[in-house]
Length: 202
Image 1 (cartoon, rainbow, N blue to C red):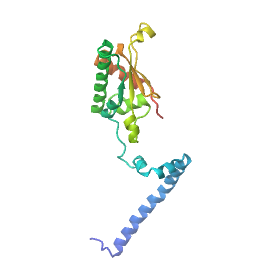
Image 2: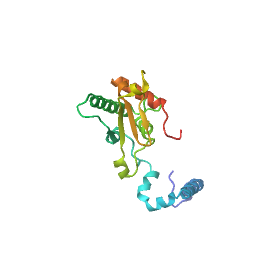
Image 3: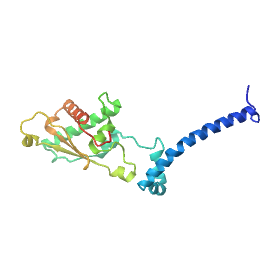
Image 4: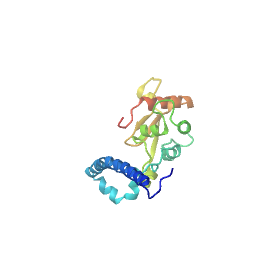
């Protein structure tokens, strides 16, 4: 039995759908008002009004660019030693290890090790887990990679150093003495990320 579009069955159906839509809207209005008030409190309502197109991606699903290996590798700015030196060879090897490590994370998605992903690596190094929204900021985004060849002179005899991150300066320093093999690099960096603290709310 089909409802005639002019009959009472169809009118009841339309009223029912309208009631559901109205109920959903009535529930959303206080939430949206609270959001608007929060934006106004920080002056963000004016930013939204002036930059509607740019800010739209903050509120529409699917617009935010995911962190990926390509973005990270393009952002790396290694501070290499003199070309042809033994130090330079060690540094190049560490950059290769880093590239392999990040690629492995991306291929696995969320690692079996809690909190370990390409996104968590970026969060750990820089304090942010997202690609910058503004294109000019995205293009200018760099992660300085430094290399520490002299940890023995500072710490004396020791068996392990972890990479040091400086989220404010957007930099990471790798202790070259402790990263001679790919496995050492992976173990060291995994422990550093999982055991270290990140700039985040949680």
